[in-house]
Amino acid sequence: MPRFIALPVGQGDAFLLETDKGTVLVDGGRAVKSFAHLFKTYAQRDGVDVLVATHNDADHANGVLGFLEAGFKCNELWLPGRWVQVLPHVLRPWEEVVVLLAKQAKQVANEFEEWTPYRPLLEQYAEFASSEVEESQDFVVEKIEVDESGWPYPLITNQEKTFEDDLSGELFWRSRSRVWPTLLGIRYLPERVLFCEAIAAAKRIRQIALEAFHRGLPVRWFVYDPTRPAGGETWLKPLNAREIARVTPIPESQRVTPIPESQLLACLALTVWNKESFVLWAPPPYAGPGVLFTADSDLKDVSLPVLKGAIVTAPHHGSENNRSVYQLVMQNSVSEVVWVRSDGNFRKRPCKEYIRAPGKRFCTLCRNSTRPKQAVVLFVQSNIWVPDERVHPCSCK
Image 1 (cartoon, rainbow, N blue to C red):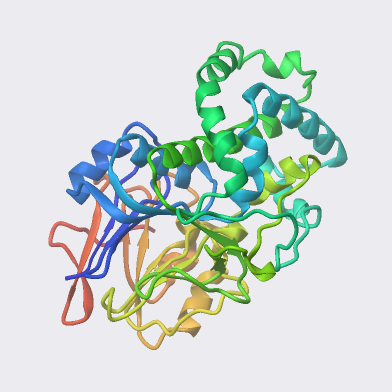
Image 2: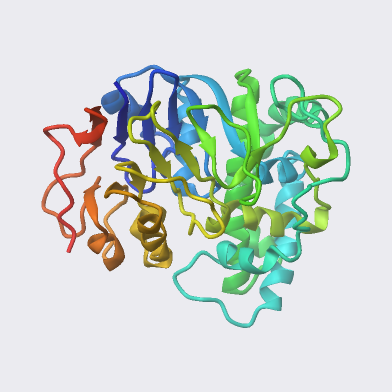
């Protein structure tokens, strides 16, 4: 019997889907250390078949690292193709990465006169960075070929060396992390914020890649491409990305473009960009009426399947920035869907479009709720998603 669980992480998304073909964990929320306890408590499993990081936001990717560090079993890892592009640079000695990002952050911060308050600067920069990083959907250039486990050949040696050098480099960074911006000549607030956000993004990719590689986990890379989605499994398919082939030599249409050093900050910005969030579809009959994992995507240019009673995860935790999604979903629905929203305690979420959307709604934590956070557990009964008797419906107003 298919089962879906929205884990009650402190902030962010963490969705578990169990089918008779396989089990997937899509994202893991913001916390690294506490994720293991949540997973054991609510999933009551020792691992999954597929572990997915939809994009490089902390409230999605940190728990993926927590899953790996806790030693849970995993048959393979699915990661965004953008990460392959930055790996050659973020796997360099950490001090070099810090100095390079400081230089680029200062340059970028001086190029923009106005930044929108209360929004991550790295994500704001992504909207401009897309024109800096070549947007060819063929991703053709240098020979980055992957072995049978999915790891790129040129990076394996670097990863082995980086793992050995990490202890001294990380300790040096931590001991001076508060004074690094000053030492590197970063004086103004936008420069400092952009630099710190870029460092965090680079470190997440670096840590997840190293942890997975040294555990011997196979990896699949998915390049953002809403026009030609391909790959995955019969029971779990990408809707806005295509899988990089594991063949040698790789066809030109399947190669990943490495980026020059000068574009590291720009490409890192694209790894956290909500627009490029990995959208996945678990179709019927494997997942009952189906499950649509939207991550933080606005679903623009994504060709949606016909939805009939499927679970749809609320994009970006019900943010107003993604309000157009609810109309798009309704246009592709032949019956009401089941909305599941995962979030922390925020006054501005969910948006009114989520509250008014037709269908059943469930939140791990409702706005202004007096109830504690809950795990949203649903299972299939007569081909309909039904909640566990302990699950409360949405009470957001």
